Image 1 (spheres, rainbow, N blue to C red):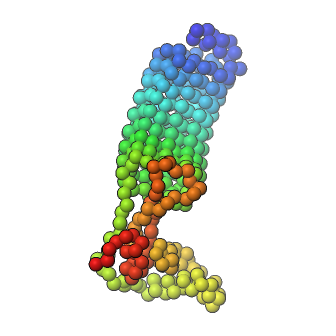
Image 2 (spheres, one colour):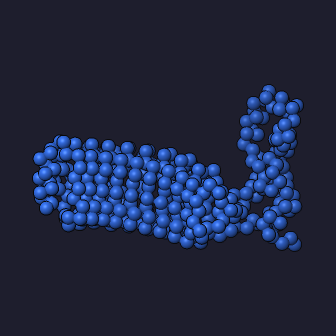
Image 3 (cartoon, one colour):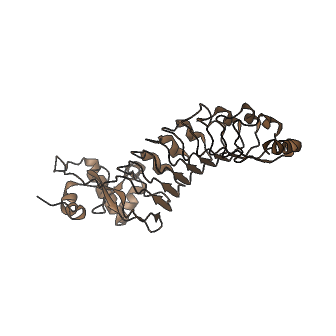
Length: 323
């Protein structure tokens, strides 16, 4: 049957667009692929293929490649020549690594499915997949993800369920288009701040997330610089829309630049430059998010402007007994 299907495809020659050899117990990729330069879709899932053939590099018009449920041990270098590829399915293999340079040619890739493999790390070069929108690496052995992954500016879905992740890089905040983020069943104890992301769905049950309570400062008295004192006065007068201060600031671009770095105290709501204390509070997520039933709270970074402010408001907010 497999031979007949290949003969039929070869008869079509450069006009053949789709080849499907799903579940045919193939142990070797067909070497005649170079006779099909116009091929758009190649489906070889559910076979016993341990490596790709060199002829695959000639399929420069290929847009969909499915090699799921085979015996591949790496993402091979030959795939870098598939410059038109948009969807790559490699789930259910034995992949442990990316071959060097493989990401260089996959500039048009939109979807990459690596579920159920044996990956323990991702290369920094993954940042070269500039058009990638959907990345799924569920059921692998990842202990960390490189910060370079967070520079995939078009990424809208990231699936990392059932790995061994212990942390998420702070750079996750740069994934401005991320809408769906899955972290179920990892070893994550703390999540970085990503409240500003446009997430619609976020799942992280099965992680040992914990609440970090704030600690008291060694030095209780605040010693502010003259710049800090002046900046706090100006920023808080601007918040009150003081017309005199607003007019004065317009004539002093240097001051305007300094106060543009302002932060807002999570307790009193006033503005400041120098952080006195940074802590974490767990809050109920936005109603816009689709949150799994077991996750009731998400971590929120809180910046505090002074010891005085914390001493007055912090104990009540965080449930800390005053001594």
